[in-house]
Amino acid sequence: MKQLLLLIGVLLFLQTSTYATDRTFTVGDVSFTMLPVAGNTFYMGAQKTSNQQPNYDANASSNEQPVHLVTVNDFYIGQYVITQGLWEALMNETPNAASNNQWTEGYGLGASYPAYYITYTDVQRFIDALNGFCRLTNQLKADEYFRLPTEAEWEFAARGGSLSKGYLYAGSNYINDVAWYVENSPESTQAVGKKQPNELGLYDMSGNVMEWCSDYYTDYTEQAQNNPTGATSGTYRVLRGGVYLRPATLCRIAARSYAFEDTSVSYYGARLVLQAHIPTHTPAAAVDKINIACHNQQLTITGIPINTPIRVINLMGTTLYQAISTDNTYTINLINYPTGVYIVKVGTHVKRIKKQ
Image (cartoon, rainbow, N blue to C red):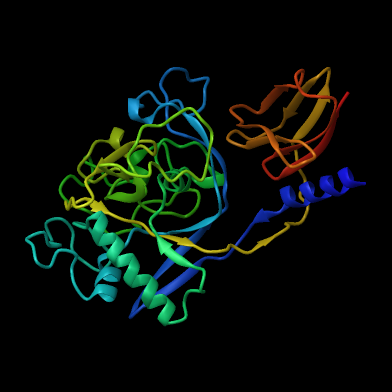
């Protein structure tokens, strides 16, 4: 009976998918929208060793390797980077009012242009002010707050989250569809939202301005990670997303950069994350073409979309195996698994199997 109850609990947990509406906030006469991202497991980084392995990219750099599995929880992320209009509405100043680093027509000027020339420290000051304002105006609950994305959250969102189609750039394999870079905007930023969005509806995650992340910069490791936040200390902070004056190779989703926290240049910007509970519900059953079968100590999954998360879980709820599909058919050798019942989750498809 105890195992049956555990099985029911695991199944209910796995069959619950995250859905939510957008969240829109207003500061003065400026509104901005945060889009929900349902957490999941994905391959982070890039490699150029084999096109038969996940995240193959002929232009992968050494600091994008090794490719490793990462799991992130649900979060909201800004549809656009922080704009000049939003910054001025909240702060009543430009980021570097006391310096010569001002927003200008030469680098892009206007309410819908990215707020650039902002340091990591400037962004933290902005976020503190935004949290205070939104609480004062009852736009945030007591346990909700804005922050910068972790590097893992940023890459997961740029890849399109659970809707990812495996694009090289954020929303397309063709950079001109989605990005401002040296070939189409060599001298300045551009107003946000003028290119195509990615699979989640996020704009400009490739090109235009680089975006600060909360992590200290450090090398990747092979270990699978849950909600990584980077090193506990360091010299540099992570920047992601490419920039208007760089080539296409540096606007790839996997491309990484870093800078001192007090660096202020005409192509550093930021995108907000909202830490908040995302309402969930169990979606209605849908016709599923995925087939899961266990035979001769081998688990075979067919009809699976590429880039679909796969998990094998025991009745105690412990994940024993996880991966991302790289083909429409996937096999797992169960020879070293004890005889018994397991739960297999493929995307939102869940099936109970028994190994003899």
